Length: 181
Image (cartoon, rainbow, N blue to C red; front, side, top):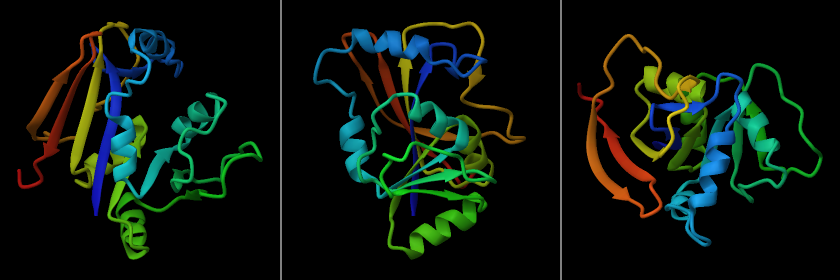
């Protein structure tokens, strides 16, 4: 089972403001030419399921339209979060450990999952379950916020796979997580 992260950060490494706002990211999308998705569509086509934390799920609900179509989404939460009735029945909830969840999804025939949300990503990194990380750096420094990386107690060694610089200022870098370190 391959587990990948695909996320945007500010230039100074934050995924959201302290209050969870991603207004700076929404503003940056105005720089993106129509039809450009920085590879997100192709990435989503490669995954069998998405695993996200409760806060990320609540943020996604604020977008209005459900952006993941029929892709199965597992929300990690100790209690099922609410949601609008118009969500597809592909949304489920789990309080499993990351390792147990990946084992269960693998048993269902899934081969590639997308892991999203700061705490969720950290939990998977601590258990050495992330295989690849794609970070799109947005050309704004917000000064303070929720960092993508928190102290894990150990270094997370990465091997550079590729970098794409977009004319509108985004820089996207993909790394393989070196699990042998």
